[in-house]
Image 1 (tube, rainbow, N blue to C red):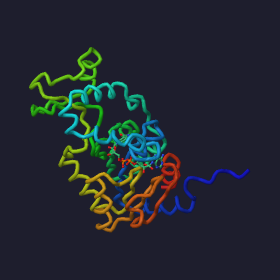
Image 2: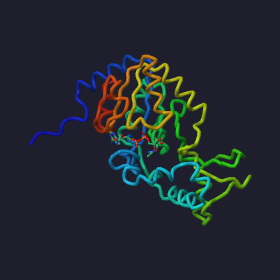
Image 3: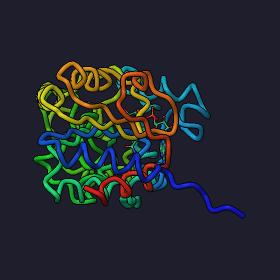
Image 4: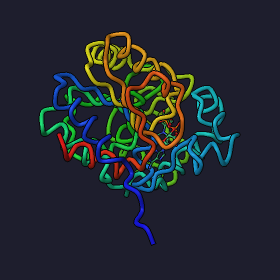
Length: 260
Ligand code: NAD
């Protein structure tokens, strides 16, 4: 019986590691795929939430959340029961934190809201959570209140199914960016600036189909960066990439970072 082939060929890992060693500005973009090995399903992978239930995409829009009490009740219930609270960083998250400790990561832009990069040790000054996070809530009513999500979850646990803002009676929502909701301008600007200056840009575990984030590899390429894609399935950017790696992220990233 032959042994399983490695997730990435050693010479390919060495080639990418050399680019990272030589780069003075590396930007990494991650998507839901880096967290599947922590037990959080992605949206569009083979086991993805939307692959299995296409109608769920509509339910994730801001408009639906704001207009339907039922959607909010279900959403808060899902938040309470979410497996994201127990999830732990996997070897992919740990490898990126190691890259940062080695002084080889300029900025990590994540589309994930699970907070696992922070848990793995990436400092906030090197991290943009471009689709927000589940740690906080925000008031949609205009008073701008924001705080730890536990404050709202405690009210949900106590029986308030659709808690309203105590200051302005606005609708409360987790501080995640839903479809149809604007991104935070400073977060986009910071990510764009870093991508434009990147020497190496690595896209990890993302289908690169959610805009405007999917513009970042384009910006990086225009600025002359090498593009590396680590993703199990094809993406629209594969044809422009200097390297495309299809293996499991939790094996691929440690293999590369270990050589940097
Ligand atoms: P996506 O679901 O569109 O794509 C994920 C990609 O990762 C897929 O192409 C899949 O083949 C690949 N993948 C999954 N597991 C992998 C593994 N172990 N190794 C290699 N490849 C793997 O994800 P996206 O591009 O991030 O877009 C989805 C949106 O949903 C994002 O905007 C994000 O905010 C949100 N989301 C976040 C989480 C989270 O926070 N963990 C989870 C689901 C969705």
